[in-house]
Every structure is written in C-alpha cells, then in structure tokens.
View 1 (cartoon, rainbow, N blue to C red):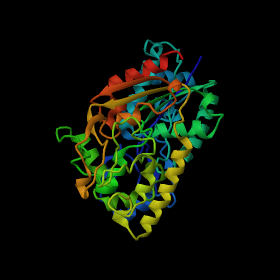
View 2 (tube, helix red, strand yellow; view 1 turned 180 degrees about the horizontal axis):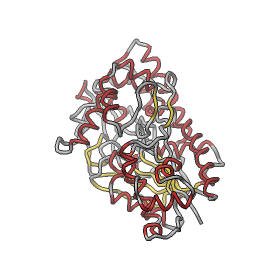
View 3 (cartoon, rainbow, N blue to C red; view 1 turned 45 degrees about the vertical axis):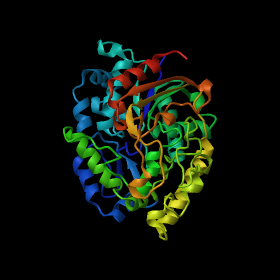
View 4 (cartoon, helix red, strand yellow; view 1 turned 90 degrees about the vertical axis):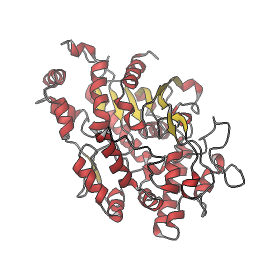
Length: 414
C-alpha cells in the first residue's frame, strides 16, 4: 500500500515569483535586494491584492546540487519515466519549499521512510511530496489549494490516503482544510504538526509594539554566518520598527492569522496579557485589545492612516478565521514542538521595550509550547505530543531528533 507524505512549509517558507523581485530564501542576492527595497515597494510586492504570486516550480541552485546524481532519486526517476532526478523532484513539488529550511527534511524523510530504495530495491511505501503555497494569502485560500493538491497526489500515486507533515503556519493550513470541508479529513491518514502555533504566538503581537528587535528576536550568533545573514536580512525585510512591521502586516492575511486567539493561554496560570491595572486583556478580550488606540493596539504606530484601516480589515479576517477553525484537528494528530529556548509568552504594560518581560524558556524562540503541544485540541485526536529541547523554530525541520520523531509517528499504526 502506498501512502504519500506531503510536507507543508511555514510562513515565508515557500519560494514565490513576485513581480520583478522573487521571494527566495535560498538566493542571498534576492533577499539582500528585499532588505534594501523601500517600504512601500515591499508592501506592494507582498500584497496578494496587488501582486500575483506564483509558486516557483524550478529547483534553486542549492536544491539542484542536493538532488543531482543522487543514486536513490536516479533510480526513482528511471522507474517512473522521468528524464532525470531533478525532473522527479520538481514533479513531487520539491521546488516550492525553501531548500535551506526544508531540503533536509524532504530528502531525509524520503530515505528514512523508504529504506528499501537505499538498499537498491524498488519498494516505496511513503513517497514524499512538497506543497508550496502562497503564504501571503489567507490560510483558508491555501487550505482549498491543499485539498486540490491532495486529490492530485492521490490520483498520481493511486493512493487512498496521504499523510501531512506541517511546519509552523502550515499546520493552520491543514487544520483549516479539515475544518471547512468534511470531505477532506477522510483523505488524510494522519497529520503531524511540527512547531504549529495552533492558538497563535505572542511574538506576532509583540512585534506590533516593538518591531523585530535583536534583544527579543534572537539573531543567530556571528559564529554561524549563514544563519546570521539569513536572520539579519529577514529582520530588516519584515520591519525593525513597529511602523514598518504594521505596514507590511496590513497586506498579509495569512501571517495576521498568527496572532494569539481567544484560546491562547488557556493552560497558563496567569493571563498572557494584562493592562496597567492588572486586568486580563488577553483571552476572550484579545481582539478588543488589538483594536485599542492606546499602547496595546496593533495600529498605534500607523494611527490615522490608510494602513490602519487595512490592518483592521486583516484583523477582522483573522478573527473570523480563528472562530472558524477553533480547536479543529484531524482525528489522528501528532504534535512535535520545541522547548527550552527563550520565547515570548507574556506581554506586560509599558512603552516600547517596556512592553516586554524576560521571556520564558518554554518554546522554540518563536512559538510557545502551550500553543504547539495540541493541548487545546480534542484529547481523543492527539495520539502523541513530543517536546524537543533547544531547537530554534526555523530549524526544526533540519534537526535529526525531529526528523526521527516524524518518521516514527508516520510508521506508527493508528
């Protein structure tokens, strides 16, 4: 029996063709151009309403180097009638996910789940596919596209069901697909979420107050120059001030859905957000707080502008999205998540950096474990929750412990 495995990247993790400037985390030159672009140019290019985004269907240089002359992929390509291993990889959707973040997982899962191929055999029970999507758009839109991709993959492989492996926001895409269409979940055998912000992430909210700041958005050490450049450039792309961050988020429906929802903090022993009187303004009051015009509102840095109006529209969409998916999860769900790294969990009164408190070592640096462990899902749906210490959010799918846990979860019956 064949059960395809489909990997869903997280936010900003899919390579896109966007007008004159590609979004390609595998291309340092392109990302440096993004870093130097004017704010209004970035806003227009990142807006799905202004600029059409197409998933890049050609392997980047790093990906081509990884799959070229790979003996296992060569045998697979010949077996399935492809010209070469690169054509096979493209046909399986491996071009879309950013290779620097997901290439190791695609290759590692392909080998780990199909050991007979490494031994020179032909048995491939778990062919691995990648689902690139336009992460700028609403996760509801991406969910509909995922359903189409699942159907196409099932036809291509003659499989009854697939298995989904998600990273970060990709988990919201999968859960949205389960929540909006009753015909979707039966086509999926199980879903494995890695680092999913199931109930949102205070990091997303806090950046509306501070922008991306080195003190609280830990950059990689200079001793790791590749990662340092990636994170430094990314920080400048998405905004190092509250105004820059709010300006870009005003055009990004998908990323706005990463705000903490009313379910966030249900496991905590104190509110995640309070005002100067100590009143809980998170939880059920979260959306009212986001709309406030004082220091806690997300539009404060752009008050009185068209950008604020656009942010309010994005916020309304996010609230509707959160209400729609609630605690929806696939009936067979596994959660793998990071812990042990300083992560935003609480936000407290103050101005600028005064909003911030020492972070808790209860997450992966971006997503707190209380949002990623599946505890707010129906207990009967979660078949396992595995914490992985000391792995940063963007590197979860590069970690051997995480990949081993994914393979074990896929091979586990039930």
